[in-house]
Image 1: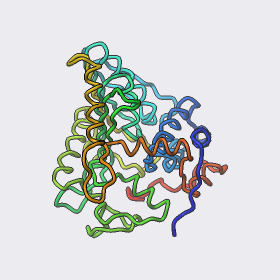
Image 2: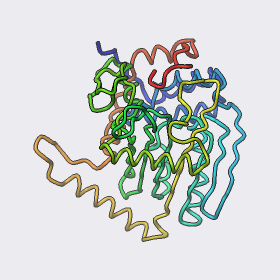
Image 3: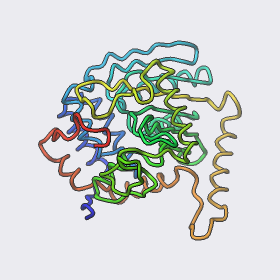
Image 4: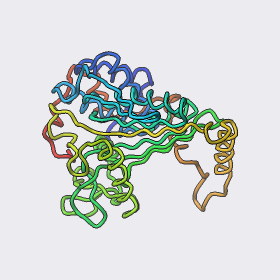
Length: 353
């Protein structure tokens, strides 16, 4: 049975989430940043990284696994490089602050590379690369996550969904933004399917016996995108955002749910490039706008209405949700308007809880 959906305005949803996060213990400014991020995800139709996450974050915050008053430190390691020490703060806030350092270096030297060390879950990477593109910078972001994906040819999870995001500015209203998990689908998408009591395609994941499953509640391993190619990409992401920063790697990365009183110690990496150090900025942006136009005008395959550029459907959903409301599962809405901080739903759970 499909769960009832409630449609909320942007500001209403954002305020509900901020209030709940503050009640869990986050400071007002940190709660506001997280709520901004989660609202952005829901607006773009990536509900796996939106309101569905609030209860989990609230439980971890309330139980001490998120540093409420972090001792942030930025260590500049070169003209264009640095490490942002996050002190296990909530990842959305740490990432937003680290991004500012990368932006400043990219504007000054042409490139800004910043690793984030020891942070909590940081949400949707496209949020950060979008902000960078709005500063006329090309951006790449990678982030490690806990082991949930089976290696190609294997049956036991080793790497995480280990996402990659890319953005570039254009002459159009919005930049090009591309964001993907290195698994066929992000774990959050399966959480979203669970919350709505929907089946998932049997190409997304396997059950405890290693067999493909359509039941979101039976998932015990995610599949790498395009087999060995996705497997290689998730290893690359793990190296760039984990080993490169001296952090735990692969199956040693902390579980999202194992102990919500402990910090996650996750890593992330931003690579920002200033196009004006390589070519004329306005020509670069104009060429990308032409590329988008040509893709949109290219002949679609049989049964396809139009060719979209990567990330364009998220832009379309963003506009639609601003006009018609953001869809939220009623169970999530009921939680947001309740007096409860959380329901002890996640602590010491299996990674696939």
